[in-house]
Image 1 (cartoon, rainbow, N blue to C red):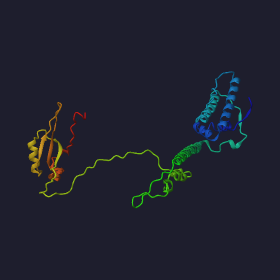
Image 2: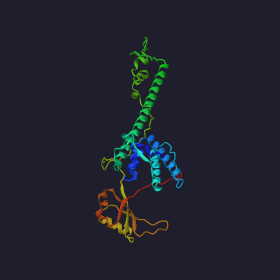
Image 3: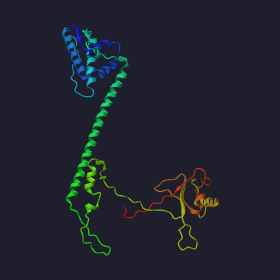
Image 4: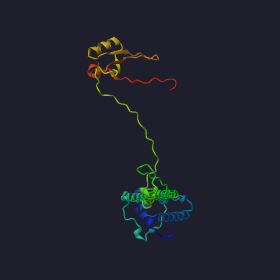
Length: 326
């Protein structure tokens, strides 16, 4: 086996292996050296440990030289294989030959302890390449869209050219036809398909939007009248009642008790209906359907008149379903 082997990458590893963490050393190598340099150094180190096994008469089996397929992790995997070869040589106590560097500019100047800087630089380079690819694809998509629009405009112009000019009869002030040559649609229209196509050849973005048409949905109109009519008018609004659900009252509260209570606080035309439990359920509190005249709105919705802890919310009316709706 040769006493001196020229390889910049292996020389860098041999110098820094004992004083640098494994991950830092791997990061520096993958960020500084090219794929070809790493593969070459991997071939050299595995040739050296193969010769060592012959000298050691097969006392220890070295790691297998795996061929890594091209991909995003190839450099990292090849570098890990190189480090595995060094680990094997240390474990068996094998002495590698002296490794030297001829091209000093191919020795990383950054300290392996500062590997984070190298990793950051590598990540920025990868991001720049990916952004360039994305921008290139976007430009290609934009060019394709421009060509499609321009083709559609030209085709439309050709179709327009196939149609003959359609003259229309002009009428005199007395209603009789004018007996001379009349202007055609082409001579009158200033923005026909031909002119539109001509204006869009150099600027396809000026083409009329041909996107899908959306149907317009009209919401039904609903409002509440505000005019105060005279009491003698024949058209009068129907009186409105406020209806609410009132719950969490004591279980022994009756309809008469609640009616008397609300009438005493000034609510007009009160009606109370106690709600009964259904389907075998048992209520621990009393609940009512309460309605009153709309004139008592302010008092009806005043929290201070209701017993502490009870709940009130507007009653929701649902339309009854007929057999045809089911």
